[in-house]
Length: 73
Image (tube, rainbow, N blue to C red; front, side):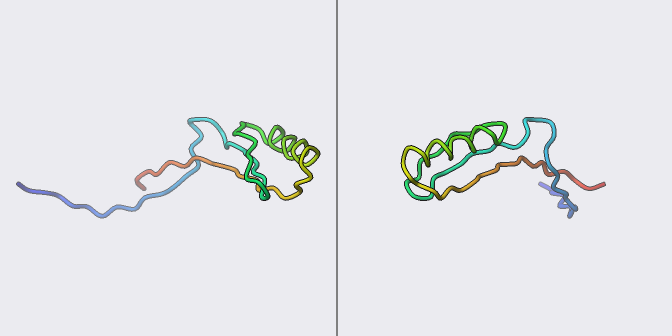
């Protein structure tokens, strides 16, 4: 059995073939989450509603982007 091992350079780029980034907010006091959304408006509004209901004022904004690795030419 023979094997060929080749060293190669790889690049990492934002993957534009699927959906865009996904946005979510998390309360830093109780851990409740807004749920994922394709725009940031819904998670931001969730923070304001959550603050009004609970008095919690700290939130973590989470943005998930997607990448694709490819061989450099």
